[in-house]
Length: 133
Image (tube, rainbow, N blue to C red; front, side, top):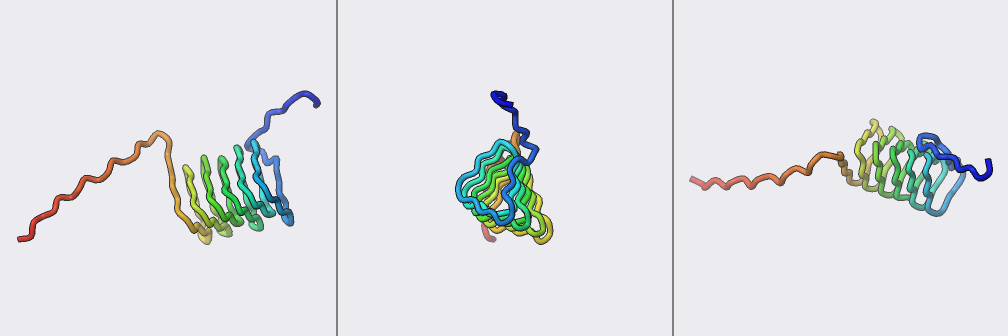
């Protein structure tokens, strides 16, 4: 349909980078992405990112939800949840609202989980020193 712009559904996978494909550069997408090949460059996705067992992302990845069965070498920001499957490896820092790591999954980095609407805890009060008797 020429002249009519369809609205993309972020829950549908519109982009597939297949096994044996190498993509160099930044990817920006409004819909979901499935990676079975290799990406060298950042991934910024409004939908979900699924990285299959043979997928490799040398990237900083930002998405709604991320399922990792392959490898990511870079930092990850999931607005929703990050699921690291038993074959998944993340070498980098992550920020997510929810995290799940299956037995065998690897997270080599730091994690930060933020929940909207929850206040930061107050610093702990100093514990008074007791004098020696």
